[in-house]
Length: 75
Image 1 (cartoon, helix red, strand yellow):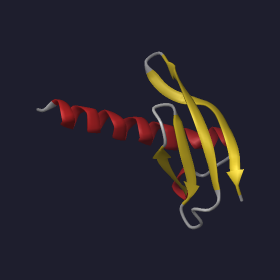
Image 2 (image 1 turned 90 degrees about the horizontal axis):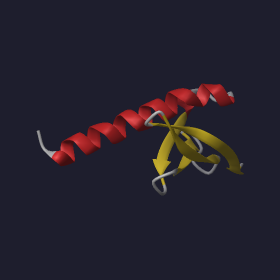
Image 3 (image 1 turned 90 degrees about the vertical axis):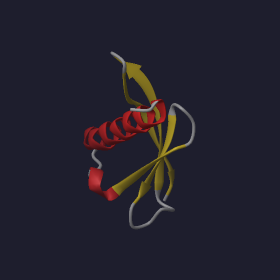
Image 4 (image 1 turned 135 degrees about the vertical axis):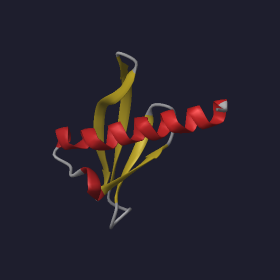
């Protein structure tokens, strides 16, 4: 297995975990698409209306990325 493959797999798992945890903020995970902006900042777009989005900041918690804050950016 190559390093690149492992990194991609880890990133996919992190995004999946972050997406699932949107429910803690009252958002239905299947309604949203998460796009990385930086290592710790993500754009959370509505799947049907990408102009409606949040911006999320993550932190490491026991080695796993979790949401620190989510801000509404555009309706």
